[in-house]
Image (cartoon, rainbow, N blue to C red; front, side, top):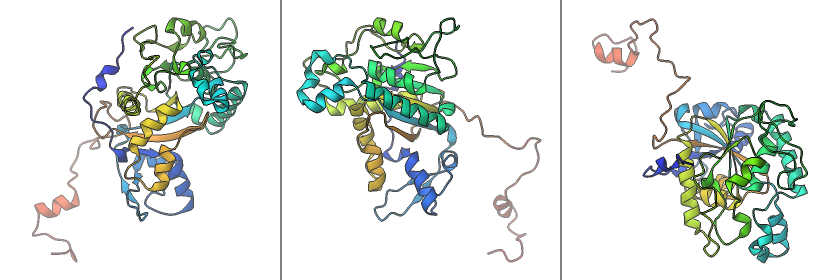
Length: 340
């Protein structure tokens, strides 16, 4: 299998002021009137807040809409490794936790988040679901964003077969939901812990028939090393590479189902220069099955998509000299009461 992710090499990383938390600005727009007080959806189209001054002064920033993407970041629901490590931290080293699946409580968390994304209307807006190729993340992604129950005889493959990963769950349909792709770059902190080692792709494909695994180069997990834990800075760099890769995608609203360590080390790179409250919202650890919606901005012009909403004007063509330009062209014909 061939990967298309190498195209992010040499690309400038995102500026810290180019990622914003939607929930923070939504709450601000309900409570006070500032240059940031835009309706929840309209600010994505028009303006963003850069709260870089410690005195709370807000200054607006404007970006072209087609240079922005909305990300809905999700940490997987509770896995068996979360439970066992809470009892004994050394349980992370147990081979019995290899590619840890969700617990029954984790599936309840999935059901609750699924209700939220449907009631809020989010489920209808998402163009693509990206998932880490681990059992717990794929179970979470399918359970939250997948179609309704699958029955034999449907003319499409299921997203997940019944009882995948001993889940005691019915199959999920791939109808009436976004496409799903598995991406290696958004995996958890690699190495040492068996819970973070994935199975072979050939084992996953029968369990998740409608998830696209074609971007993953190797069937076996060659990234995970039994004796080497991935350094934190390497996780952060991998996260940056993942974000830059997103600009090669045409989709504008994307759900990403991934892991606590990956999210923490990736997002903390964006914390400098923010108001402390916004920094906390972006950089704090995710709870199991927590969803945070954020916007990233293509300040380095990595993406190549043109706007689908911009309109060129002058149709039909006609004179349209701006008033300022007209004044410069005819300085001797100033309007009454105009300044000299």
